[in-house]
Length: 293
Ligand SMILES: Nc1ncnc2c1ncn2[C@@H]1O[C@H](COP(=O)(O)OP(=O)(O)O)[C@@H](O)[C@H]1O
Ligand SMILES: N[C@@H](CCOP(=O)(O)O)C(=O)O
Image (tube, rainbow, N blue to C red):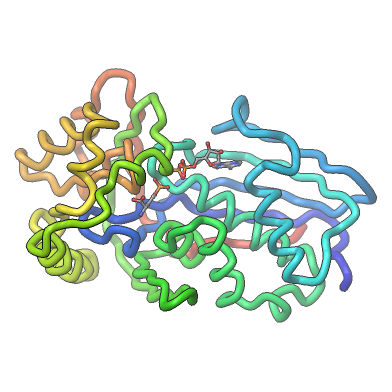
């Protein structure tokens, strides 16, 4: 196995998962990106981080991008003697915009690009499978990897994805404090009433139609009974904003595991509570992209 000489850069989009009713299945890639540049060196591990997470993430082998790179190198045939990484992060951490998925996809795609013939040794299906195994649920990594609107599922242990185009525009309301996905998943019940499962199945199907040609259906199509209300106690301000937007007829959802609120609308930025960041974003149609220096 031969490593590529010179640095390689990868750019990976943020993602909003669930989109209301599509828990652990639907994902939307957003035009907000993290970039990681990596280079194989003779020894050691050097990590520089600017932007989101720069004061919080570890700068050693436990860094999420490095963990994903090591997992990919192990599948590709071996780890390099040393690595130099520069991370330029725009995706906020612990807000429900897929920062962990972006870090994992960046690591796997970067490791593959740093190996001669890496695309054949670890094709897209195998690389996607690895990102799902590392993240634990397939929705965010599917969108981050492939871009656009994704429907992802796991068949036995095998991860699968269907990618669709959409030109929807969104506004995201990002609160100043984080809620970890792990904590938000811990709030979900083991079982749900059959009528709620049936309700969500219909809404999730309708949402795919709404996002690919029938936007007038978005308000009905973004209703959810499987996760948002159970998580409200961990993000009361987000839930309040969600209810207010929806009462006003704006199709809004909790992005991923929260606490970001996403509206399928523009011109609503003035609804943001004090201290929250607001971004009007388009869809990223490309997914993870590699640029060789
Ligand atoms: N770019 C990154 N570099 C290193 N670690 C990251 C990065 N992005 C996310 N993480 C790790 O993932 C955590 C956030 O993951 P998670 O709770 O799933 O929230 P999110 O909704 O942002 O994905 C961070 O606290 C950090 O430990
Ligand atoms: N389906 C997952 C999505 C988590 O997304 P994140 O952006 O909050 O990591 C869930 O709802 O737990």
